[in-house]
Structures are given as structure tokens and as C-alpha cells.
Image (tube, rainbow, N blue to C red; front, side):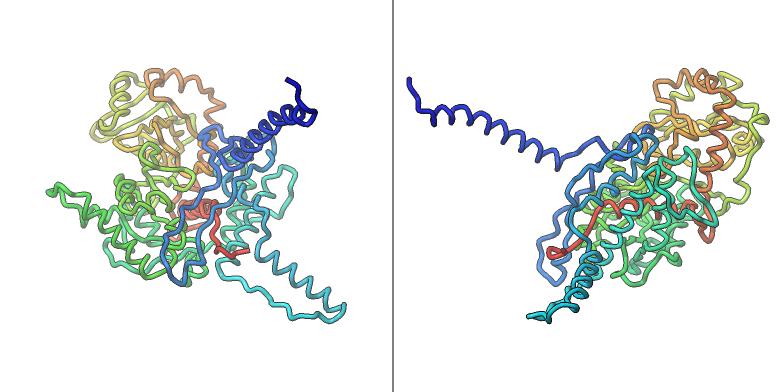
Length: 522
């Protein structure tokens, strides 16, 4: 059949146009989906994530509707330094600096410059109206400046004033020491936490300070007088819920009730409902800029009492189990620390490697899926691998830690254990045998630099694996562990870079991971 030249051209161009449309749609999809080509990559916990999307705000009327959460568009910055030795935990909020919109501070500066130019020219024909920005807009603009400063510190050739009278992070125990240092300094300059005053002890504003759940009470008490605390919620970057899960279990839990979860969860639900009804901040972000801390094993389950608390809020948990809903992109893994006397007195320090005759040590109860395997293969089987359910009478637990080169840290019923910190305190290299566990502060710390990770399937080969570590390698691991120890020390009052400040820094990182602004923000 004969066709005109125009119809022939149409038959030729139509497939090309279709292909172009498909390619364009694929490109648009990739801009809003997860990408693995991040600035940061990790080898120990290789989790990277796109910017944390915020949930849609509740559809309710009121004067606070203009301050609604909005996630930033996903964007992948160019790779720096080949992606080696970098911090996976910083990736999310570093990427958030790639917003093409100017910040309120930048816009205000531009308007002032434009007015100065107009003063030298003919009088304006109409009066200019200076745009005023809300506290939230100015706060978010300053956070944007912090993101930019941290991004600059990542560049290998970038120089900045890193003078610090106390401590300058350096070495392989950090994914990126410069980025961490700059982030920490930015936190000290501007991070503010509002602690809700509602609630009464013993469940609220209270917690244990001597048991394996000691971090709950210590952190709650320290936040009451912390220099990071602000009494003005309009100046706060984040809002702390001062509830102790351990106290809830102690005072509310009813062993005889079949519905024992109900009253405990109701306690948390009622508290969130109280502060959400009294203040606008929870509803403004659907809880995304709020955080809680729990060291009790039941912390993750009780946090499910409020869906937004579980899904959106920052949960600082000792039981950082990814199979139970822990999300490293928004949640914080904190260490479980046993303080028998309420302080670190007598817990810190140990002999040199040459004075440690025992290759590896573990003592603990038979519970959970991993410990029975350890005990089956090694209890009373080898003089070099000292594994006990119960220590012989008269044998000191801390004395055994100090005599051992490696300290075995297997999971029990839950993934958290004080043994990791006990090992670091006594100069023993931790041996981690855990599934689905995110180690404390692994957004900043490279645990592979000062610990040994052994898969569960390799427990029968434990001695062979540890003997395969040369003396030189061992000394390197132990020395790095001594450096990392400062981040797990409990001080009263807190000191810079100690465990309390590291918890706050992890919360600071998650806050940098998203942005809040109104509909007419910029």
C-alpha cells in the first residue's frame, strides 16, 4: 500500500517517541527510589538508606496546620574518596543538603542585598514587604548549614579548624573521623532537646542506675540538668519522652493477668496522648522529631503502643534487633552497661596482652538460641577456651575478664548484652556472636576495627579463628578498643564524647536526616 511521505515519517517517529517516554519515566522513578551509590559505604554494617520520608500529617484543623512535615526529594551526591572508610550512618543526612531550594537565611540575605542596591538607584515605585520567617524555618535553615559543614569535612583535601582542647577523633575506629568530629562540634553549638515535664515518678523522670538497665535511669536523670536541654519548645530540635520502660515493667506489669501487655502499653499511649493534646509538636511531625530511650528487653514491644512512636519516632534501644523492627535509619543502638555500684569505679583497666594467659572466656546462663551452641562445643572442653555456665566458687568474673585475650559476647534471649562494654572496660577484645544485631553507635564507630565477629555457624571453629589472629593484629585490636572505650564510659556529670553524649549525637544524626517546614516555607 502506498503511503504519503508524512505518514511514513509518522510510522518511523512513533516508536522513537515511545522509547523516549519509557526512558524518561524510568529516569524519573530512579530519582525517587533507593540507590546504593551513596557517598558513604560500610563494611561492618553495610546498611545505607535514602533520606527518611516523613509520614503525612494528621488531617485535623487548627492553628498549627501550616507547620507540616515534608520529606526532601531523594538525591545522590557524587562519590568522594572512592567510598572507602566512610560512615554509613552519615549518608542520609548528608544527602539532604542537595535540596535545590535556598534556605530562609540565604533568601533573607539576598533580599537585604537587593534593597541595598535599590537605595542607590531611583526610588522604588512600591513599598517592599520584608518576608518574616518562623522559628521553625530559621531552625531548619541552621540545620541545613550544619549539614553543609559536615559535608565539607568529608572531603579528603578539605581543611577546617579542628582545634579541640579535649579530644580530636582520629583513626580506623571511626568510619570517618573528620565527619564525626565536625558533626559533634555542630551538635555542641546548636542541638537543643525539650524534655516534657509531664508525668510523675516512679514511671516518668525516673529509672534504674545500677542494674543492666542502668542507662535508662542515668540518661533520664542527666537530661534533667543537661546543657543541651531547653525550656523553650520553640527552640528545640527534638523532644524527649522521659518514660522508663524498666519502671513500667516494675510498677505496672501484672504477672497474673493474661493481658499483661495492655496496662503497660496503655501507660505509654496515655502519656503520648497527653503531650500530643497539650502541645502541637507531636502532631506537627507525627512523632518524627520525638525520641524515647529503653534498655529493657521489652522496650521495642512496648513502643508499639503508639503506632507513630514505633514507626516514626527515634527509639534509642539496647535491644537493637532488626528482626524485631529496629530500623538503623531512624533508631539508635545504645550499649547495655552493668554498673553494680552505680559508677564505673573498679571496672576500668586491665593488664597487657602478655599477662593474659586465657585465649577466650565466657560465663553465663543457658538461654536464647546461640548460647546453648557455645556451651555445647566449649564448656569444660578446652583450657584455652574458658566457657562456664557458672564460675567455680571463689573465681572472680572481672578477674577472668582481665586474664583473657578475647571475651565471647553471644546473644541470650535478646541481642543486647553488657559483655561488650565489660570487655572494652577491662581491655579484653570483644567477640560478637549475634544475629540481626546493630552494634552501639555503629553509625560512627567501625566495630570491625576493635572487635571480632564470628558467625553462629562458625562456633565450632572458634579456637581456630582466634588463633589465626596474629599477636600484632591482636595488639592493634586491643589498643583500638582502649580508644573506643571513652565512648562507653558513664560519667556523672557527663563528659564530652562519653556514652551520654554519644547517645545525644546519634539522636542528632537522626534529626539531621529529615526536615520540617510549612507549606509556604520557601
